[in-house]
Image: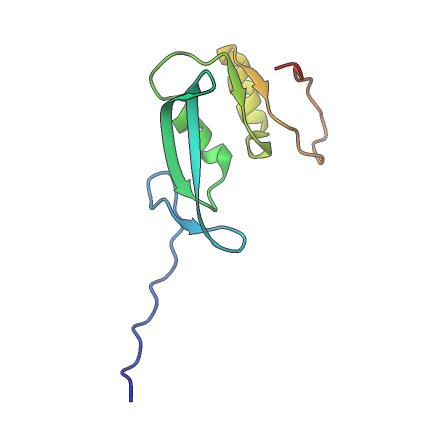
Length: 112
């Protein structure tokens, strides 16, 4: 007869200061939030669990030291009024696909 298995530890939400692995929709995953110079040279990297919202990590990635970016390219996870307002204040162009359920569709530069 086998001894009983140890109980599983309760799942904690991983965040910017927690572990870099977490449960996403269906699996154990990690996200890499990257700030790059041009298209190839990384200048800031933040690892988070798969369930962490892009909006929560945005401030960490943009606040990293280095050159001020001219353009932010992101996925729909970065579609938030607070992010668009911050980008406008910093003079950064946004290239972010908009969510379909957005009531107000701001204009974006599709040429970038």
